[in-house]
Structure formats: structure tokens, C-alpha cells
Length: 443
Image (cartoon, rainbow, N blue to C red):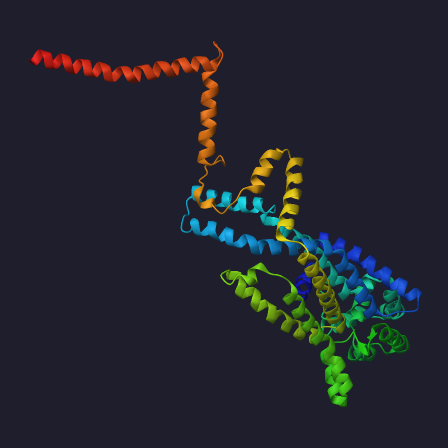
């Protein structure tokens, strides 16, 4: 999940992602308002509920992707057999025949090459849009933004505030460059303050001591919002760990490492629960990369979990736990379905889709039930039909031509054909007569 976070950090303002982020932000804002109405004002709880809702909505896409993965494990031996048959053949005709036979395998199982990619392509913008919502909560949650507004207004009423905030904001832990963020805007100041830690507040108060009372009031409210199981999700776990070690607090050390370790562990379990055709196939060149990622990505999660605000680590851990629970349920659901049932369902859906585009049902059923075990014995031309089928069609056409009506174009064509055949048979006879005549003269 942190991969999507890293990618999304640069694409948060892209048109489609921006609109999806706004929509998800409305969901987050609604969750915060509902919890506030019952007396629970906690960003950590909001993140967990928000993650559960979003990933629950994506279950249909996840199931579709898992089905394709299971089907792919069955199709791969047949596809490999075809690829081996055309191994080393790089001419266009061979490449086209190979592709035709591979397409027949997908037709047989009622799926397509894009069957596994499409659900992922749909999910990716959603996953990219999740990151800016979690990273910049005040932008989307009005109740959180209102907490920062009094001190924000006081800062913006101070002479030279923009240069002060730019200098603080460009440094760690905020890291918001003035080149890409307008520090004259209210939303930018609020987002900068949201990323403040205790040491950052101290730097601000050194520069603008007049806002001391408002700053401490805001800090108290933010601590209340960010406190989750004794962890300040607004601070980096590494900072909390350093403080706990300095104070000799064992409980503090445990709390500081809890979220990063949980994020890495849950992600590892989530990946291991997912069926993956590429990883199961040892001959697949992608298998090594997928297995390596299974172990390296959780480690990266732990490292990033220490260096980014604990709220992001909580989101990664929550999303991984939700995926684990969903995966167990999906695995149980798929175990109740036989492969034949899944193929039948896929073929039925594919048939409806093709009939909608005008393909005849008889042809669809023929393609769906075609066995590819003997694909190596069937050769096809650019027309897409086998030699036996082509010969059969030629014989049918010849039979129809013999029954053509007198005076039709077909009957005239038959006359020409018979005339040509007569010439071909007459020529050998003429040549034979000429030879006999020459022999008689010699005698």
C-alpha cells in the first residue's frame, strides 16, 4: 500500500485522482461529523472506519481479480504449450497464428487477456486518491480544519508570516516546498500546521510569540484528535521512540514501534493470503520478482512507518488488516465454486457480451467449447479458420455451383471452366497425334 502512497504523492492534483479524492474526502468528512455527533472526535477512529468502508466497496473488483488469478493458473500450461510450439518463429504469420491459438484458450475459459488488468486499473485511481485524503485531512474534513483556523488567522495577521511559514514548512517534518505550495493561502497554512510536531510548534512560537495562547489551545485540541491508544498519530514514530528511550519508558517504546511493525506484518500476511499465478509458476520469469516483493515491501513499510506520521502507518495497517479479512472470506467463497462452474459463468457472461455486439450464438458456443489440447495440430490462415473448415466450405460452394440456374453468372462461369478444362485435355491429344505423324514420315 505504501507504493500507492509514494506514487500518489506526486499525482494528487491529477484530474481524475483529484475528483476521486474529493469524493472520498466527503466520505471522511461525513464519518467525522457522525462520530462528533455521538461525542467521538478522533482522527484515528475515522481513518479505520474510512478504510473499512472504501475497501468494502471494492470487494466486487477484488473478487473478479481473484477469479482471474485462479483461472490463470489453469490456463498457463496450455498457453505455454502454444508458446513452446512457436518458439523461435518470429515471422508475422507465425506470430499471428500463435496469438489466434492463445485467444482460443481465453475463449475456452470465457475470459480475456485484460480480465486481470481491468479490475486493477479501476482500483488504482481509488488507491491513489486515498493517500492525499489521509495525508491532508484538514483539506477534506471541515471539523479538523476549524480547529486550526483561529491560530491560522492570527499567523496570517502577523507581518512577514509568509517567509516565516515557508522556512518552517520546507524543513522536516513538514517538507512542503514553497515552489509547489502557495503560503499566502489559508489551506496551505492549515496543512502545514497539521504536520507540526511539538518541536515544530516551538520553532513557530520563537518566531511569533504573540500567538502563544492560541497555539497552546490548538495543540491541546489536536492532541485530543490525534490520540489513538496512547499514540500521537500526528507525530513520527521515530520521534516518539527517541523520546521514549530518552525517558526510559518501556511502554512508550512499545507504543512507538507498534504501528510500523503492525503495518509491515499485516501487509506480509495479506500478500501471502492472495493467490498469485506468477508466484506459483516457478518457470515464470516474474515469479522471482513477486516472491522478492513479498518480503521486501513489508520491510519498506516498517521503515516508512517510522519516518512518516503515525496516521499514515495506521492507515496502512488498517487497510492490510481489512484486506486479510476480506481475503479469507474470498478464499472461502471461491473454494465453494468448482473450476467448471467458474468457466461456465465466464462463458455465459462472454456469450451475452458478444451477442450484444452481434456475434451469432452458434459461433460463440463453438468457440467456447473448442479444446486447445490439440491446438498444435490445427493450422489457421489469416481468415481465422482451419484448413479442414476451409476445404469443407470449398466443397459446399462447388456443389451449389453445379446446381446453378441457366443464364445465371454462376452457370456462365461453369461453361468457361468446362471449356478451359476441355482445352487442357485436348492439348495432350494434339501433341500425341503430331508425334505419330512424324514417326510415319520417317518410316
